[in-house]
Image (tube, rainbow, N blue to C red; front, side, top):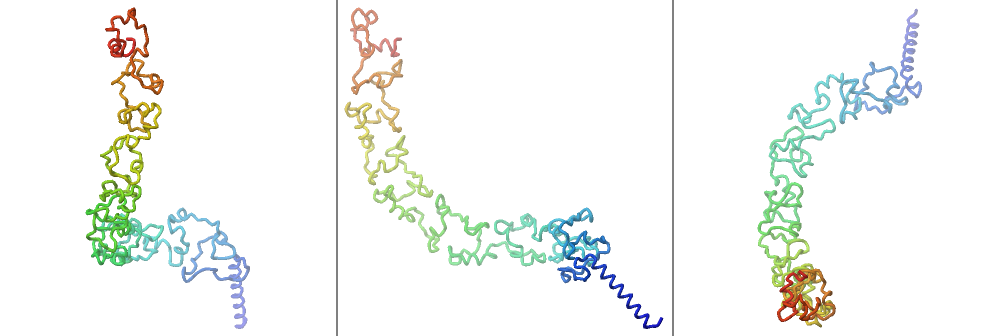
Amino acid sequence: MKQGERRAMTAAVMLLAAAAAVAGFASCNATGGDEVPRQGWNERKWGPLVPHQTFPGDCALCHVPDTWSKIRSDFTFDHEKQTGFALEGAHADAKCLRCHNDRGPVTAYLARGCSGCHVDPHEAQLGVDCTRCHDQASWRPTGIVAEHMRTRFPLTGPHLAVTCDRCHPGAHVGRFEGASTLCEDCHASAALASKTVDHQALGYTRDCQRCHVPATWKRTHFAHTQFPLTGGHRVAACAACHKNNQFVGLPTDCVACHLDDYNNASDPPHAAGGFSTQCQTCHTTNPGWSPALFDHTIFPLTGAHRTAKCASCHKNGQYQGLPTDCFGCHSNDYNGATKPPHAAEVYPTSCEFCHSTNPGWAPPLWNHETYFPIDSGKHSSVKCIDCHTSTNYPVFDCIDCHTHNKTDTDDRHKDVKGYQYDSPHCYACHPRGNGG
């Protein structure tokens, strides 16, 4: 065969081989016949495609027909069962080619642990056991709070949320030593920027913990020993009392701050009533000044008086020179009483002789023993109206109710001296007030 013929035949064979190769590649391509590039494949980022020599020949087992860059939605692969390595945390969502690519067998860098895939940002300063601080979910370190508890600066409040490098600039390379534990070294700018309290003018630039807690700058725990903060004072802002950044030489008596409250009080009117400016005599520090603590020693408040409002007795702002006898306030009750009619029967105006201070004046305190004992026999259960059937309250003797023959022939009473049928004589024989 001549040399020209041999060249033509070689070219034909090569053309046929190329055509066969293209046909073989296109057999899984839905576009049919034309070779297409790896769609969406970022070769620069992920590297060239991992060799498929050991994969099944049926591409459709894994890929969708119209593109090489998509895996079938119903494709499943039990990584732990097939490879012995369980994918957990972020590894479960990682692209297959992050680990399976042309760098070499996965087992080679898997044997080196985390550093086989992940560059150590700490430059081996913290050892090779990444799991001490990290888990497989994210790069955010875990267990740092417990780790920090063993240092001079336990993490509390907002310190729990800040990144390590805020306090440890060398954290990215594993250098944590030398960080200051003094608040002012990190928060000096915050102190100088304070508008509520001029820290610099007052010299409050160090020892922040004297006043502040780590949780927030607004809450303080300053030991207010000169003027203990109780009640409504506990929740007041510092500037409410310390105006114009004055923190020294302030008065500690109530009226110095609350004179306007004193002058404007109308229930009762403090100024018009000549009330003492020793506010603590009557008031607590609770919001609303209540409950009042005035000790009503001149006129002890008992019964219904305990729940009455001040203005019920102290009308028109009068708090001096008021009467302390019951009738002085309750003359209308006395004159309007009908059961019994106090005024018509000329009852004494010493109300406390018969009445308590309970609501409704009940129970009455009239001592019947001093006049006509009714604490025995049937007398103990009768009502007033059983005997006092009219508005008249006469002097009674037993015989007025318990009638019998009052003649000399009354054998049962013939020995009664002088035949006096009055109560004292009756009680001489009937001490229990009954027939016994």
